[in-house]
Image 1: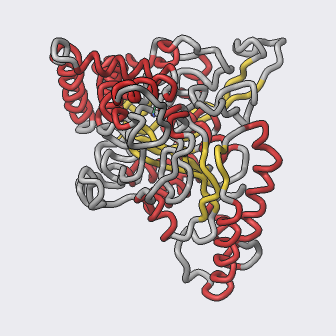
Image 2: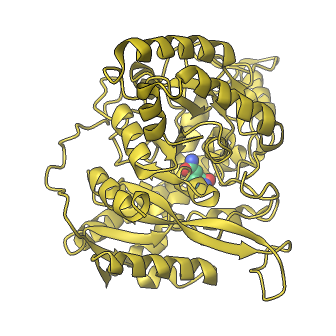
Image 3: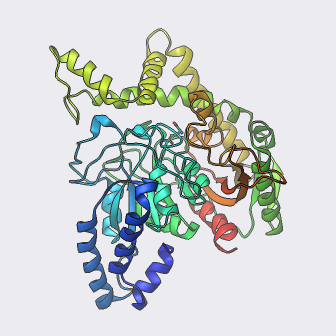
Amino acid sequence: METIATLRRKFIDGSYTPLQAVEDAFAVIAQKDGEIHAFLDTYREDALVQAKDATKRYAEQGSDTPPLLGVPIALKNNILVKGKRATGGSKILEHYTATYDATVVRKLQEAGAIIVGATNLDEFAMGGSTENSAFGPTKNPVDTTRVPGGSSGGSAAAVAMGAVPAALGTDTGGSIRQPASYCGLVGYKPTYGAVSRSGLMAMGSSLDQAGPFAHTVSDAQLLHTVIAGRDPLDSTTIDEDTYPEVTLKETYTIGIPRDFIQEGVDEDVLEVFEEHVSALKAAGHTVRDVSLPLFEKGLAAYYVVMPAEVSSNLARYDGIRYGLSVEGDTLLDVYQKTRAVGFGEEVKRRILLGTYVLSAGYYDAYYGKAEAARELMRQELSDVFRIVDIVLLPTTPTPAFPFGAQSDPLSMYKQDIFTVPVNLTGVPALSIPAGTVCRDATNKPCGEQSQGTQLPVGVQYIAPHGGDTRLFDLGKKMHDQV
Ligand code: GLN
C-alpha cells in the first residue's frame, strides 16, 4: 500500500477514497495473510462502516479533516482496543476482550485512522522472531522461509506485505527497530515517556514504548506526533517541550562507537553500514568515533532488569483476574495450573529469571548491579552527546534468519545487542533501511556462484532524550529524499 502522505493527498483530491483503501487492505489480507499470518484478528465490518463515513467526510470537507482520516492502520495485539480480543500472543489471554481503549488507540481514532486488525507477536512481546507466539509464527514477506523479526513481527509483516501503510508496535528492547530492519521498513522507538503506556500490556514498564512502522520517516513522524503527549493515565509521560535544548541543524555531528560494532556483526552487514557512513559524509554531516564501553554491558543489564519487571508485571495473570482459568482444589492450585498451561516456555523462563534476581538473597548482586550499570550507561551516553548530535549503530548484527535458526535462547538474545542500550537509557532511536545483503539457501552469504535472496538491513540513529524531532529530521534527509 502507498504511504500515508500519498493516501491523504489522493483522499483530498478524490482520486482514491478511504473505502477503496480499506477494501484494498482486506483484498491484500485475503490474498496473502493465509501464508504470512501477520494478523490474529481483522475488523472488516467496523472498518468498512468507518471507511464509508470517512469517504463522505472527504467529499464534504476536503483537507479540513483530521490528519489520518480514512488511513488503514494495524495494531500489535498487546495494545487494547475496547471490545476487541487482546491476546498478547498468549494462550492465557486467548479469549480475553479489552474493556477500554489504550490512549494511543483513542488518539489514532480521534485523528481518523481506521484500525483494520490486530497483529501477531511473540508472547507478551518476549522474543525477536514471533516464533514465541502461542498462535503460530508470522512469515517475513520479503522471504517466507525467514522470520519477520519480533516481537512486533506481525505489525512489520502487515506493512511489508502491503496490507496497511503503517502499523503500531511496542519496543522494550528492540521490538520495533529489529523487525523494521528485517522487513525493510522505518521503525521508531520514542524517548521514554513521550508516548502513553496506558492500555499497553506491560512487559518491562521502565523500558516499554509504543511506536510506528512505516515506509517513510515522514509517515512515522506523523503517527508519532498523533500518539505522543502527556497523559493523566500514565504518570511517566512527558510534555513535548520537556527537553528544549535539543535543536535541529543543517548538518549533524554523528558519533560511531566503533569498538562496540567490531565483533559478531556479519561482514556484509558492516559493509552496508559503512556505505551509509559514506552517504552521511557525502551529505555534509561530520562523522567521528566515540567510545561507549558500557554499551557492551547492555545485554547483561537488560536480561536482569527486563525479566525482573516481567516477573512482577505478569503476576496479574493468575487465573482469577484475566482470561484463562483452570480449576483447582485450592486458590494456589488455580494459580499454578493456570500459569502452567497458559504461559509458553520463554515467558516462564523470564518469570523464573526475574523472580530469582529479585529474591532477597540476590537482589543486590543482580538487580541492584544492573540498575547501577544502567545509570552509568546513561551518564556515559550523555557525555557522548556533549560532543555529537547523534549516535549511529547497525540495528541488528545479521539480516532476518530462517525459522528455527536461533532456537538457543542466548543466540536469539544476541540479536538485541544494538537495540537494548537505547531502552535502558530511555533515549529515542530510529531504524531506517540502509541496503540489502544476500543469503543463499543454507543461510550463508551468497558466493560468486550461489543464488540467493536479497534481505534488507537497517541502521539506527540514536538521539539524546527529547531528540525525537532531530531523528526525524536526519531520517527524512537520508531516507525519504533519496
Ligand atoms: N527481543 C527482545 C526481547 O526478547 C526485545 C523484546 C521487545 O522489545 N519487546 O526481550
